[in-house]
Picture 1 (cartoon, helix red, strand yellow):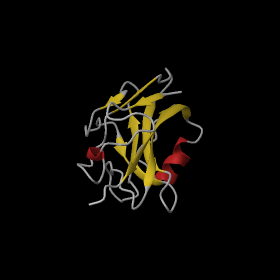
Picture 2 (cartoon, helix red, strand yellow):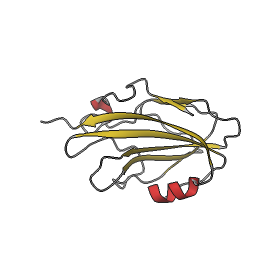
Picture 3 (cartoon, one colour):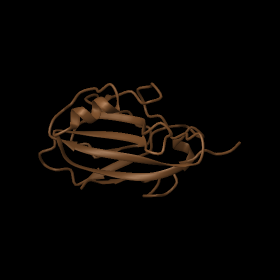
Picture 4 (cartoon, helix red, strand yellow):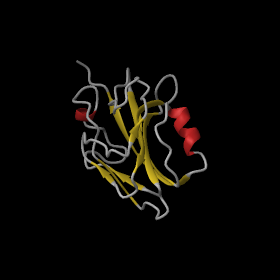
Amino acid sequence: MLDVKSSAFGANETIPAKYTCDGEGVSPPLSWSNVPDATMSVAILVDDPDAPNGPFTHWLVTDLPPTITTLGEGSALPHEASIGKSDAGNTSYYGPCPAQGRHRYRFHVYALDTSIGRTKNREDFLSAIDGHVLDDGELVATYQKQTR
């Protein structure tokens, strides 16, 4: 199993406002380890499984080189990587911003035996990685929108 971590928050902890709609909305620092030797690319799917209409995609990154095992806060992605559309309609990280209550956010990292290119959306992504996942892991944290 991939070991997914962030230096900004731990498992089941609150995501700092800086990485949400209440702050700068920049992507948090992420790292992963235990990538299998046969890995051809790494993908990241960040979603909110507690969204009212089903999982809401906040970030979808594909084709990260397997030698990359960390992304810094708000860092630019390597040129080989592709970003799919979030459910907010943008091709960048979309910070947590639940309408009400505390939601969970899954930072899911996949080690793949192929490169899949840019995917249109979550369903396209999940279809593209089907049968190609060598290993995966996730970091789950929470966020509740600040009241003003």
